[in-house]
Image (cartoon, rainbow, N blue to C red; front, side):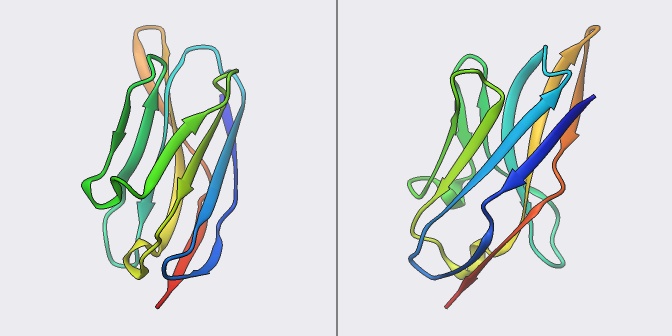
Length: 119
């Protein structure tokens, strides 16, 4: 099992910045990607950004140029730097880890952290 602990959410005015962190522990061997998703009220959970072990980064079009995903050297912590925040970025943000084990890929989720952007 992989345990994920998120931090860094909060309330910020439009145009401001926040940084989210997610630390993975437990059976972290085999992690091949870490990322962030978000879910706004009444909407489906959507991809925000992912970072693979090869260093490939993917971003949702809505956050390109504003958000940056990064991982620490050990590869067990992922960050999301969010700049130029907009009210439409308001959502619960979830950390996601993909772990390859026994030929299958397993998804693990954090508890979620609220990000609220006021206009």
